Image (tube, rainbow, N blue to C red; front, side, top):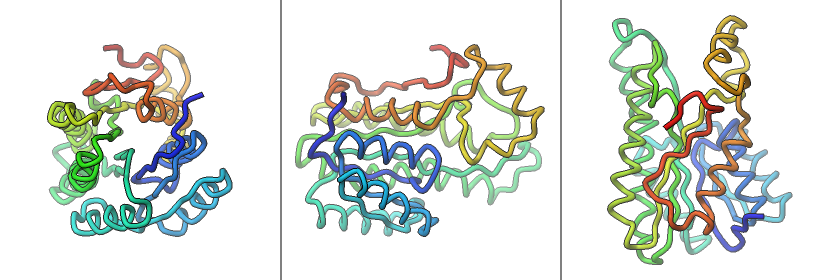
Length: 248
């Protein structure tokens, strides 16, 4: 069993779906977990679940595209817990449309949250991780950043940027005992996908060799592994959790 006893974590976009599953998986392994999302009322329920596991939880209603708010949040976690060992950049949004119909503001909004948000959070926690000479940063990418998809140019560009950011930062901080990796989920059963039309759902399944959608817990288990000391010699890696949809 992976142990994160004594570790502290910050998970963005953790009110539901994959982010919530990640937060709970880290807490189950022994970590105290700070949560952030723009849906504050949902975060309260996740904090209670974390506390029910015997761990500490705190929540912040923060838009990760706001670098000032992100810095204030990180400083508050440090003040309360003294350190941040694990950062999971999971916050993400979609505003899908064909590129010819995509509004510039929809392009900008997705890049600001998905890519800029990961940059702001990473930049805010790194000085503390460098000082303690320990850190685990896990960025949530996507299989569509590796294979493409119609109508998601903004989302795909943001997630491809996350993969590039992962590799760049991994090279910069490796000598400080800080690892930086990404997890690229495939099609995962979450509140965002449960309302898809049946024909779209079937088309998605046809692309997956394992012939089923993944679960948020399966993604969370990959994150938990990369956050642990079992993965201490892995950095700059993209872990595919996609049922064989993309093989690298």
